[in-house]
Length: 436
Image (cartoon, rainbow, N blue to C red; front, side, top):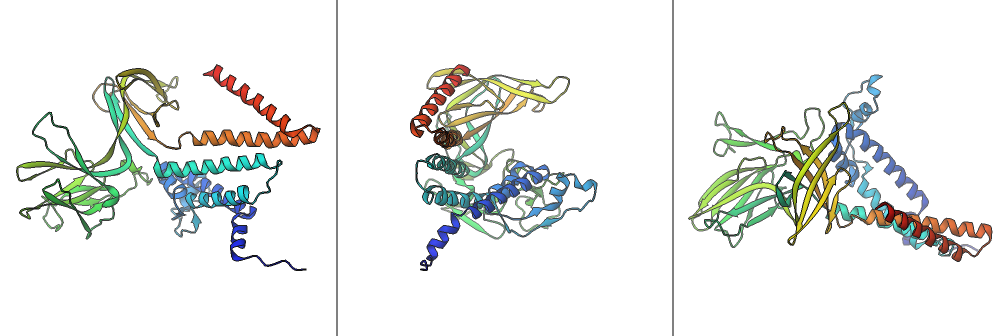
């Protein structure tokens, strides 16, 4: 008696839920983790993370950089050898495939019985952890805030999100300031020869953006030969590699573009260059009003303010290497003050935001003579999801182990397992309460 052949859909589900696919995906995750870690030595954390872990496919593999990271150039120098074909799936693709594989195989198709309940719980927790990574990648906001001792702020600048701000100069000092914002996603495709016009009912002019470059610097047109020069300057694209050949971090890049302001009434045009590192905004006059145009990192507002009371640096004995940065701050919210301490790996968390200690300056680097701290601000909707998923994984595996143990020693599995799990959780909670 022959069995009926599987339908194409059944074959697809069988393949996606197979142990073989899971093994291949885990092996590839191990491989890209290994290569990404090696390349990090020359290209930096941000560039390696973007290439290997945040991409659908790895665009290229720098074999030379990996070779040097393993110190094999001491035996043979192969130079800057790269494999330019995008045949290796990136971390984003692999995690998506792993999610589907574990959902189909570890939740849907797994045999449902008291013997497998612990394994199913653990599989669910791992899916929850993968989902946490996806939520963090798409929705987390990261930025920095720099404060000198005595300063207070409730705003921070994004590391990666750039915007063009248009602000009207107020003649009344008491008037509330406000700005119109154009997100980078709306103009980052406007390379040389491309342009896009932006308009708003509150503005007496239209704004065209063109010739955008991700990392550039205004250069003087000394001989007047440049047709794209504006007021004697043109935008010169700059390499995104530092002196050592490593890719620069995204927050170190300085984008630039050409802005053309066109009066809605007269049609008169004014041209200017917007540059991220400009000392001041570009000022345009339309009619009797003045407007400030600037290309900057997006500003985000905190639901509370932070005042830096004191900051200190602790060094390793006998060296100049920093061991720990610590900041004593006051958290201000709704007229209430709360004294907090922020140090490395011990952030302050409140209302979905985490404030990490990032940098320290004793006043010599800035030249001000006043100590300052740099804080990394993270708003991550899935901030605690990995911790929750790890706890659920531990509970699931503990339940599975105790169920197997109960059958081996021939006692009632559920009473034995649940009783020990409750006792274990109570002891753990008591220990944490004593520590905290």
